[in-house]
Amino acid sequence: MPERPKGRPAGSAGFTWRAFFHRTTTPVFVLGRGRRVRYANPAWEALTGAKLDDALGLVCSARQNASPLWAKALTPTPEALAGRPDKARRPTPPLKSGPPWWDVTFVPLAGDDGLYGLVGCITVVGERVPAAERNIPAGVTAARDRHAGHFTFDLLTGTTAAAERFLGQVRLAAQTSAPVWLVGEPGSGKETAARVIHHAGGRREKMFVAVDCGGLTPGPVESLVWGVGGLAGSDRVGTVYLKDPGTLTRDAQVQLLDWLTDESAPRLICGSTRTAGAEVEAGRLRPEFHSALSVLEVRVPPLRERSADLPRIVAHLLERNRGPTAADPAAVAVLAAQPWPGNLRELAAVLSDAATAAGVGPIHRDHLPHDLRVRAGLAKPAPEPSLKLDPALEALEKRLIRAALARARGNVTKAADLVGVNRNKLLRRMEALGLVGRGRQPPDSSTAQGADAPRPP
Image (cartoon, rainbow, N blue to C red; front, side, top):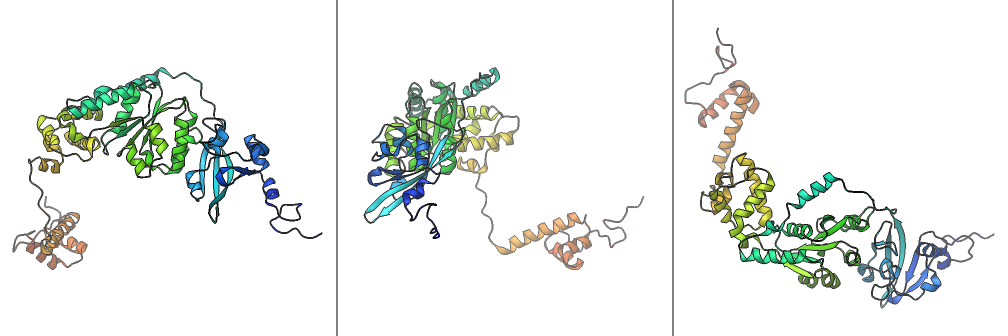
């Protein structure tokens, strides 16, 4: 019997790719030009519940089909369509959320005139986790209400035109369930505004979840949303706040669009330093994400536009810090003279340090950082450090000698050993540096009544 050539399936006289893929337990499918199904193996049929004869020629595209299998689970990612291998986590059809999920790997097949097709492999991830059916304890409800009390409209009130306009927009956003896009400078309070909208809205009984898209790599973000026990599988999430959603991958944006446009999905609020339109123009945000998920755009004013409201803002931040509950007018005047490029986040950090310095009393201007008092004209700038070598060396030498004398308890001989010179040289340097008067000998153990000699009774 002739030996079977390597790489051929058992029982085959010659290699055929259909027989090869038919025998694997990995679900495999092949898409041709136009993303039409050209092949799927029996493992794929068993997983999807679809027959290859019925699937042949169907287009895998969200714009062509209504079925979750073709429109969502098997649709190639933008990266794969651009010719780059890619993996995407998709909800198991016909579910709108998981677990379990499918990790679909797309391998592009390049041709002479562009993309010839794609090969896809599916891996099942996670197990179905039933939603917990239990009552919320009274203690948890009370804690939730106390937390919500920190995020009311009073937090955003003010007398400036910027504050009044901002508060009106936030009130309007809280009255609807439409997606909101908050745009503002770093530290201006976008997440705080999102929490106010959530706690004043119709989904306040459920959770508010903030996701820092820019601070996490795509893997953890997708696991947080679609992983085992993720947000997409929970019915307790009321609002999802996405910080800087333009940093998400294009495929993750499509998945979020599919999830968050569903009627049963949580409300979406996004925060960014740029408008959604600017993110689209920069190529960071998909146009359909912009049109569907940024219905209301609210500008969060920077702190410098709310300088008249600074006393109230300071009082609120101090109350939240649980330290001194007041800052005297002189300290507030110093704070009002600052440009605050870091906005509320920078102000909160300054007040936290000042509260620590003040202890239990009110914050005075002397408790504030020196550079803030300099900008307010209340202190002189610190002198520039000298760059001359001799004074710097002398200062260093003084510190070393004093440290050696302290360790030797005033014994010059021991101190000389510590700094690595003889006793007479150390005495000469001490006299030259003014550490001992001319002609005077410091106490030493070598004398009868030295520093370490026992005192007479």
